[in-house]
Length: 433
Image 1 (cartoon, rainbow, N blue to C red):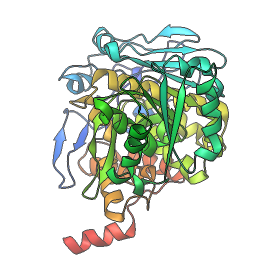
Image 2: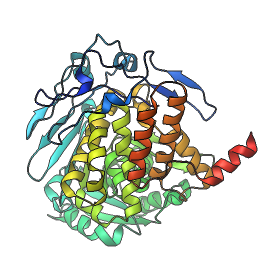
Image 3: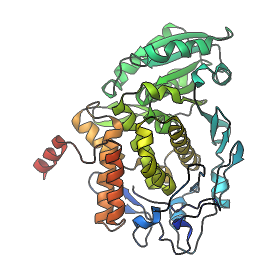
């Protein structure tokens, strides 16, 4: 799906998208590789001028979705309907949004000098996302979400030498918890039921009970596998996400999607299962290879395209800072991504409507990953190429203009991401037609 939601800046920073003659956003839903298209709304094409105004990093505008079945159609309503301004102030403040959005999204961002918190509002299953530097050393944060005595840390052979010992020290501080560890092989190709069996084996051998806590220490693969293991073990145990990659921090650790791959399709075996908390230590991004760092940026760009035009503009202005690992820029990008993800999940936890917009680029991207073999391309690389394919289709159908398509391509290129499918997929497509 490709959509661009209008947003309003805080009064001190006006943007073109707040004008009463703004073009309404349009959505193109790509339901399958067979090119079945659903139009979520009607109206004029989205034009690049709607995302052309500058934005200040200190102002965090928000475009929030409603929670009921008409969420997308309301987001794509006529020019006469104006969204209320939404902002995030320093320290303790809640998003200011329209009445309809307020009923669905109650994400609160709390900012201090060393810690930012975004709350995912899901009733009695709500949980915080902690964002900051050095959080792996904060036993006060992690231990308050470990509800039982026994803990199983699930990690991989790449992350373990870097962060496992620090994580164990934080969990064991005070001597309240018994901790076991299972380390899995690293890579998308190991995201399978066969490998996941090692987690359940360790849990059973260690006699973990129903009040135990599983902690995912790693990237998206570890988070998805650990979450699914927690959902299934004794019909559900506590679960905490400690992501260590960009992809995991800005996307997969938030929202409760867990699972493993199947030879016939990516993420086809799994469950919706929310964590007790997400703890993001931004210092862990410093040890990522450049390729892995860039891979996660594709998901940040996705939020800019589907619902947060000012974030897209900010990325155009600050991509070099992200690639240079500027700590302040990364803190902002992660916070914005988590705010967007939390808002969508609160509105539509189980992907019955607006959450499907988070799949921008994933229909094509998952096909690339499955077709090539899991692990040949990183997930974010496949999503980047899939995003350009989806945007190109939207342009061909008249939903977006050429300039916006070009800007999407250019931004992904600047992030050092692929903007076309691999040759092997192109060759296979030609042979099958």
